[in-house]
Length: 282
Image 1 (cartoon, rainbow, N blue to C red):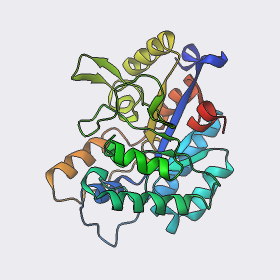
Image 2 (image 1 turned 120 degrees about the horizontal axis):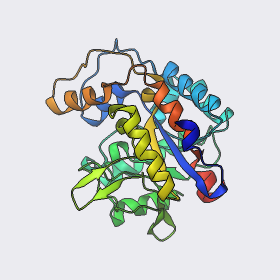
Image 3 (image 1 turned 45 degrees about the horizontal axis):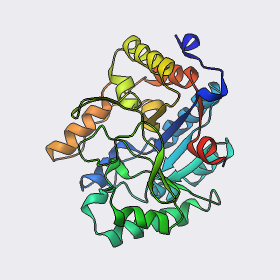
Image 4 (image 1 turned 90 degrees about the vertical axis):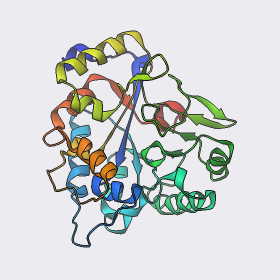
């Protein structure tokens, strides 16, 4: 199937982005859940497996990094850059942007940029945690003020008010919105074809069939996933008390173990490039 999907012409180069997160830490941040000091992340193995998979498929990606991981995983961030990938900001912590004052959002962004600039001289991209940043004048203005040239978010979740565009376009003067590919059926029904969770939860043949049809019809495809999806998230007990955070975490855990093969097929199916390389000649 991967061979039949492969596109070799230059116009078919598509975008690949990967969020570098630990699922439990990210959801603890986002849902304001407490996390035991004894919790031990497996993010090193997850990211290294992701990098090895990308090497096997001879493709590069943009890594949206939560900068908090630099404290204990400095070499991991260096490894991403050394292997030829590009890093962008996913905030410092994986917090709900819509629930924090604008000043806190700006502080979180600045802290992330300060940290990530130690690994890569220029950071021009931003992805809000869980697509939670409002696309309003104030938040977009903060991004522009601090040198961000594009913001990438999805529209297949209720919390996002990102524009339902199927191509990159200016969302504010000098600031590009880079959408994650989604098929829209009317105003309410979406098929998030560019989401890693979709490719995992659907039967593999069905997903790859829809991907082939998309690539036959469209010149733009943006696929995103998490490092813990590619790396194969191990089964762990969900430590959260609130129903929403438990359910959200459990959904992401479904069919995540031993999921590397589906992502390998997707990575080999397209001529992928980082967002910065393809859209900004970075």
